[in-house]
Length: 272
Image (tube, rainbow, N blue to C red):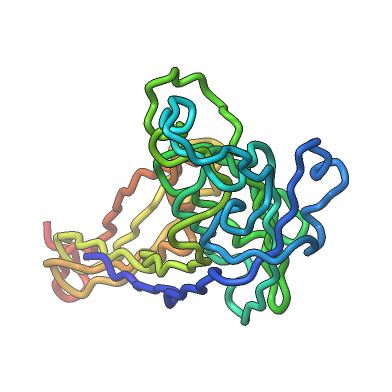
């Protein structure tokens, strides 16, 4: 029989859509100049793109019934390169060091994320959300989030790829879909006590030993109890005193029991 305590952190979500600040970085100087550490640039609405904000090179193609015009879609403003999106968000207690995730539903092609000036990581995908574990980079109160989006090709997918082409959706730069900070409730199973049932032949003392099978674990743990008669005896083993098994630390133990029980007597004389 195992007694367990089930605990969960309440889930929460903060919608990050709305006003952000954007800076184009055609010369790739933003990382060297630490643009991720401050909120600067032109205001932009996200979800959205630089084309919708009229940033980039304006289209100079005149409408006409020509092959050049009909060959593919033409964005009104075109930009291919790195773009920095920054904003501040105020967080209540419970977000710092939590299981918080920054969720960016769709962008092209590569993203990098900073939280309060600290690099979180990078992702590259054309067809799946970009998710970042950011709890270690958050603090109670005001926070600065920065997302660098680079829509230049990262892998040669040829000329027939529909996810990166002007024929289907244009090669845009921005973040679309859901943009949010989530803290997901993850139940944790904490085993506090394990009850071991042992059959004993009579009255006396029962001793249960838990012996580690690896040399780097603590010494042997023992639990004992008095038995008044034969039958089943329950011994509660405090699991808090044992090292839990994980994929990083394979803690293994051998459990054994010893019985010292009194021989029957009559008028203080043992009966054979």
